[in-house]
Image 1 (cartoon, rainbow, N blue to C red):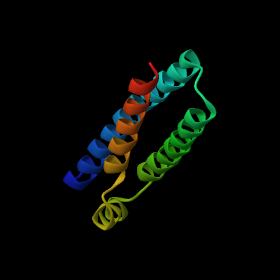
Image 2 (image 1 turned 120 degrees about the vertical axis):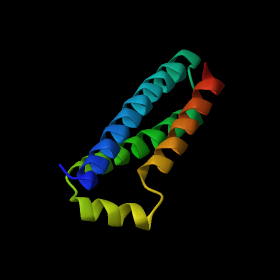
Image 3 (image 1 turned 180 degrees about the vertical axis):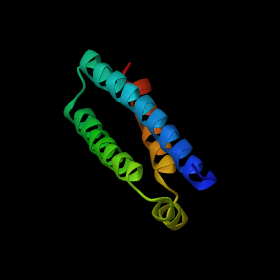
Image 4 (image 1 turned 90 degrees about the vertical axis):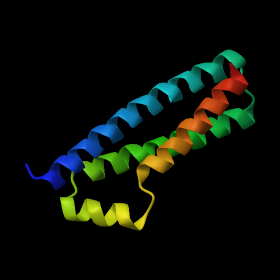
Length: 100
């Protein structure tokens, strides 16, 4: 395995770890909304986060199948999924704080 391939593999593992953390936050947010008997607006907010999470899952699958060259090009063109995942995690944490 080349250094480039090892780098991509390391990033994939990091993405999977972040995704697992966000999944856990999403579960807590859902439970908080149920326990809080969240109003319609809060449920819509939670649905929005769920859609974002679904997109991230899809992106994670795409990343696993990328060649090293494609992965490097993708990360040069955007902040990458990590920044998006961090924002989603923060939004879910804020939601949990408001509703627990």
